[in-house]
Image (cartoon, rainbow over all chains, first blue to last red; front, side, top):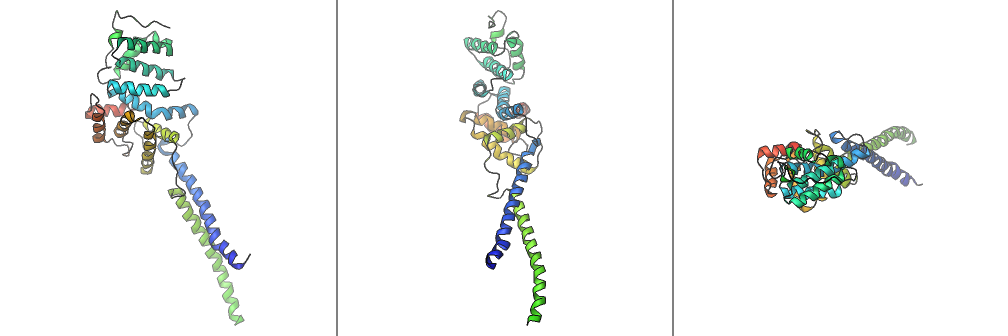
Length: 160
Length: 140
């Protein structure tokens, strides 16, 4: 190697390599710091990971249930139901109840509450209580009172 | 001439060594700074929708999320990535939650924007008290 080439390695290539390695190290440290924002230092367990990823949709669904129009409630519940994990029975039941409560068609309500019974037969035995719990978390009409479907004398959804 | 050249050679050798060490140290320091700051091509790169949703979800799950300014800044791009995945009809609902929870505003609610979005959605109530309730209830 000539003297010029050695000098180039020593004064140009060497510092550039060191700079690049240090930059990569800094990049990794920066990424680790960003991952730790808002208490996210450790990697979540797979179940928590799924729950966190679903959280934006769930938060918007809950906000819509609190204040949204019936159309918005149905729309977001439908979208969330389409994406919901099979194992998340509690949320499925909750969304179906919300959908049914704001539905104005008695036949439609019967069909939706029937789906609740399919999703979770235990809830089916206390359907009215479960629906009442949901209505208490809604701030606007329709849906902040039990629908006519649950009034005395109305045929109950048969358990499947 | 030779008598003058010998001492002149030994002094530059030690100072050359110091100069080499200094240049490598400066290169390392500058490189590290570039990496930490995320200056291209050492930037964070595009955030995957999965990671973005995870981070946004984590913040939405907290009643009063706390983070340094750079954390809120990073959250803005995560919110944008998550928003892309929403259908147009429901995008405004997500925007409303983002405004009420202050996800683009350091955690402080943007009530004016929230009210505007609520009215655009034609929701039954869009007053301040109702939106404050929405902020409290917009948790997963």
